[in-house]
Length: 158
Image 1 (cartoon, rainbow, N blue to C red):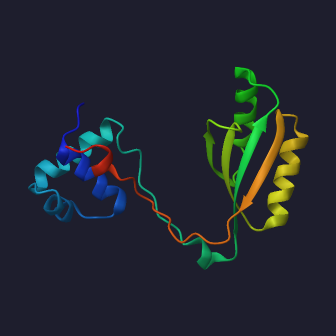
Image 2: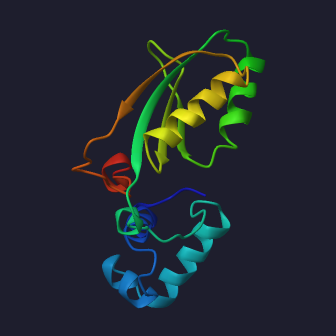
């Protein structure tokens, strides 16, 4: 399915507010409600919309620690990457994992209850013999800008 500018706008608005009513969405994208709903259902069926979720204000629940971690693997065979990914995928505190170019292999984002929990996780991962050569940790002090939506309208101008 080829997306047009209205599809992109629907996706853009839904990612900002997944609880928007169809009538409100239709108004924002300049469609009548029925065709708008049909497009949303088609976008869901075609896999452009993977799901809906609540954005939790974790700071309201208690103190947390966010850490970005650069990880370099000892070896770079496909099996080494697969073994590493299989292990970190099971760590609930890893909320993002990116294979990157540059001086290291992966960039992980952890959210933990504190530095003790983070260090315990890293010790467990290094003891598991999953190929970690070295890692560098960057503790987040403050996050003045965090966006939960992609700039779809500028990435895919129509």
